[in-house]
Image (cartoon, rainbow, N blue to C red):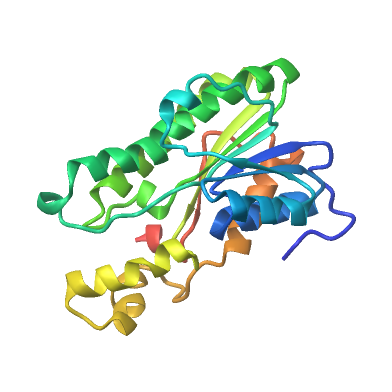
Length: 254
């Protein structure tokens, strides 16, 4: 549910959302804007970022997060940083291309580190900051055929906790959100690959592969994730840090 006009809990804050032009990122951008934040929509898709930023009265940042050399020299003035951008590759380890493994870790672990590094000086100087890392149930549990993704998300969990320990004295919190499968293009693109790997029709992948561990048999909606992110970004969550919030329909309860 989007925030009402009285729920301007993020008024005066500047939020940067990576992968912000679609899926979970776009849902977060919309929710933050509804709560009064000025949003920077960061995405490799410049046109989509511009379109959403215009809709929200924010700004677009066309950025290739795989250009880690450029990120190393950044200085960011955001109050809220959402590390959301991600990709997926489904393949057995023995067939997993090493270059693709490195690419996923660069985008989903090294880039978040570099963005946190760039944002912390401003956050420390003002005595407030919120780092929100879009992890996954795969940051807590493993699945076959996702060696790079699971490795990156487990690493992101560690980075988030270290950031929490270092940032605590400066008013900066750092937390992970751990959804199960969310209704996004990233998940929809996996259906064909999973069908081939498991030898089943694509129409059966959700029930027989993706949702087998979940007690609630449906996909997570992006707006549900965004509502949690908005709370973590608010003053109400000032004592919440170093945590991993599951939104996985009970998957990790097993």
